[in-house]
Image 1 (cartoon, rainbow, N blue to C red):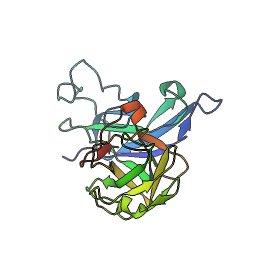
Image 2: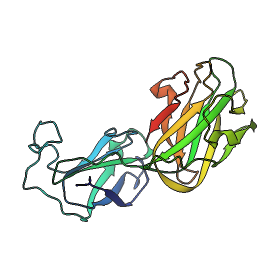
Image 3: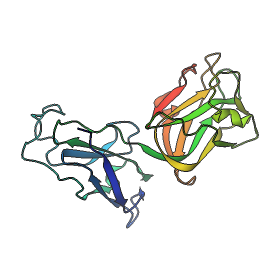
Image 4: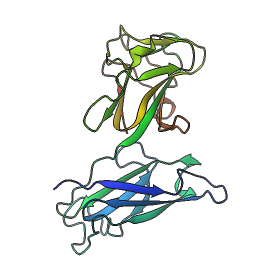
Amino acid sequence: MPTPNIKIKSTTKLKISDEVNQDRSTVIFSVDQPIRAWEARANGIYEGSGLLLGKSDHLFPSATTFPSSTTFPRDYTLAANTDISFDIDDEELQQDDIYRINMYACDDIDGNWNPRSLRKVRYIRDWLNGSTSNSGDHWVQVSAIDKDGTNVALNASVTASHTASNLTKVTDGTTTYSGYASVSAAEPCYVEIDMVQIYEINSLEIWHYWADGRTYHETKTEVSVDGVNWETIFNSQISGEYPETSAGNEIKL
C-alpha cells in the first residue's frame, strides 16, 4: 500500500510573531487515505526535526517505539480526505519567523510513515565570505533535485550580489573544479538562481571550489518562492564550517 500523501489546504499566516493579532496561524490539511496517526513540526530542516506543533491523540498512546502495529489502538482510524486543522502559536517558535511545516502520517494498514515532504522552491541564494585559501568566493555548481532525482536548476539563470564572472557555470551541470564562477568583494557575497517556476525540491547539492580542500567562511544557503521572503536552510555559523570536496554539500529539504 502506498504511504499517505498529505495536502496542506490552507494556512491563515505564513509568518507569526508576538505582535498583537499576529501570534497564531491555523493550518488545514487532508490525507488521501485512512491513517492511524499524524504529526506536524515547525522550522525543522530535515525529516523528523523541528518543534512538535500538532499530533493525533493516538500518536503516542504508550512509550513503545513507533511505528509498530502494537503502538496504535486498532479502533482508531481517520478517514481519507477529511479536513484536519491545528494551530501554531508564537510561543511554539523560537523567534518571529516565517515558519516551515514538516508533516507526517501513518497509514492504517501497515503502520508505515510517509517520507519527508518536499519543499516548494523557485529561488536559491548561496552566500560565501572568503576561504582559508584566499578572500575570493567561487561557485562550481548549484543543483536542485526533485522527487524524481532531476536537477530542475539545470541551466537556470544566475545573478550575483557583486560584480562576477562566469555565472553560467553555476547551473551548467558540471562539477569539475576547472569551471567556476567568481565573485570578489571584501564582504559576504551571494549567487542567486531563479528557476522561473516553483518546484517541489527534495534536496540541494552545492559545490564551491574544491580542488585544494579549502573551507569557505559564512556559508549560508537560502530558498524562496517569491524572491522576497527567504528561509535559511543551511548556515555554517550554526551547523559548522566544512572542507570542500568533489562530492559537494547536500542539503536535505
